[in-house]
Length: 178
Image (cartoon, rainbow, N blue to C red; front, side):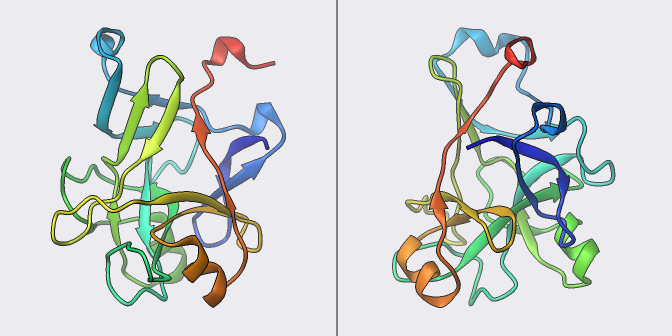
């Protein structure tokens, strides 16, 4: 499909690029990361992304009914920049973020959502609902917004808004880029 773009759209949401030189460069974890098969609840820093919002995270949707993702709900969280780390294991909290800066609308965020598999290099987000539950969630690309989002129900979101494409994120070490 392509690479995660280092440039956000006009709403402060990260999207897609086919150009490896425009891809987001990230850092995460510690030097001990090679000692485990999977690392949960990581914060990821966009080294060449939005400088005011250096961490990546998910920002609760403008049209959401609440800050939860679940089956039967169209709620969503767009992928964008976050100013400060949110606590690992915490539901969404209101923090400065790229969407709120672009839109003037205060939204809650989660940043410590990433798990990294050392065997596959898969980067997988896990949303945490306000009751502390871990819902099944889907990482999607929303072509009409030129942005990535996290959903609890692909069908409910698509029925209320637009069609999306379910995607996966794979960490590509810089030594592997063209």
